Length: 175
Image 1 (cartoon, one colour):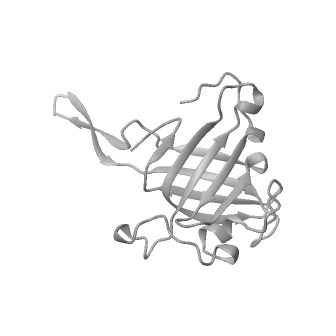
Image 2: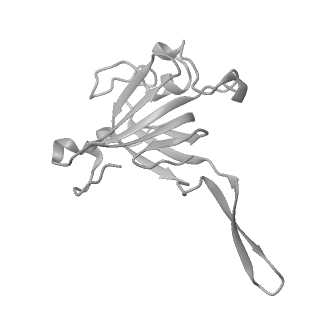
Image 3: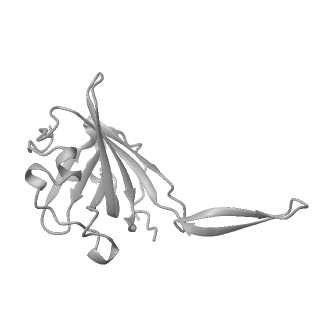
């Protein structure tokens, strides 16, 4: 795990989304944000079993799924130009197999529903080496399903609500 001593901000972050074959799209997060929830040690819910006298046993139970949101500036609904990579792919295209992603391959195996549900792998990179640290900081989420929502506001945004049905690797490993 890479250690860091410099506080990170949105200019230090990028998100790369990959399908199960050869497609990959990077989005510089200087135009948005990342928020991650449910990252507990065993990827399991915690349940308290209480007796009538109030004593409790606390145990790990069913697996919980990590959820997170990615927010990008909205330039177009489909084929949004990413300011960092100058590419013509929007979050809508990626998560809905549209445009350049129409032939994308799911990262969810068919035996796990990949024939029915489209999933991607998502890597979130925080820059470290460019700001004097020994390494960059990376989290990779596998078998992710996302729902893209456009908001016409100031500024317009794409927000993708993502659920990770696979593992998390990188600076933090959860499985």
